[in-house]
Length: 386
Image (tube, rainbow, N blue to C red; front, side, top):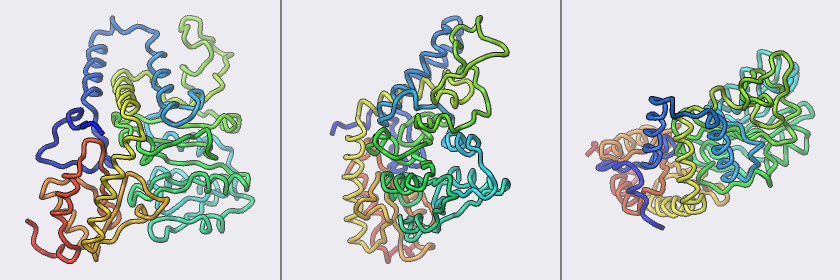
């Protein structure tokens, strides 16, 4: 694989192994954002058609990366907004049920729990060993279950769920499968057209390397007629491109996922940057990203096992992703090791008693070797920080 280190800012002396926290902007994205700032400073150069062309270019790139149709992609500002498309759009009644996992990221948990105020029953399945199983979820599903909401890749452990199996499980019972894809999209192969996923919401500032405040929501065609549109974005009205001829009282919405776009979809700075980042990911290819990150994490797994550390469920066959969690003998020892790594210029995250490692194409085998060198053996974590 080619060396991509020069395509990003120079982190030295830091070793950045924390893409699951913030994916850094490629240099090409930074340059594109500078160009967008210049464009905004000279609005006479900003032509009206770009308000529509830029979002459509971004939408098309997201569709190619996810195996969806462009008409099924809404451009959002967060995963939360995408999940809210269903939470606010479905006509929930008292007694309806929603099943979620305790390990879901808050945006895929709080949004659903908030519906309890309407009498909706929200069942939170407690994860065992950092993940929920098909049997656990199946035991909670009933004829009243409207939604199953899970994270594709766990933000804390890196464990990846089988979208086909869980999606089929809820579909067999007539429900909708909503997925937070934030920690998976851009680093794991995905073909939404072939999967029983109804909605996938994604924040783009991690593995898609986009600016903070960018994202998308995939909404399957079959679901569009079942979702109410609570806020009208004037861009999504038929004929919006002809601003002077927009209707006033009688109008029709475009019949695709664009009706759920965030306001000001043509955000000049964020969306130009997002477009450049998508171009970068598409150029590298998701297969290459995944292959490189998996090789580094396999190297890390081998070294951690030899040193007596406990690995997360992401180390189990079929659950691998581009994130790996590991821990020492106690939460205190794990927290101390995290401080030790930080003091030695290694950037990783501490999540729920586990150290989370998430490399990217700018990382190398030497970076993993350095992490293992600083970590030492699991039993040595009570020693004074270097």
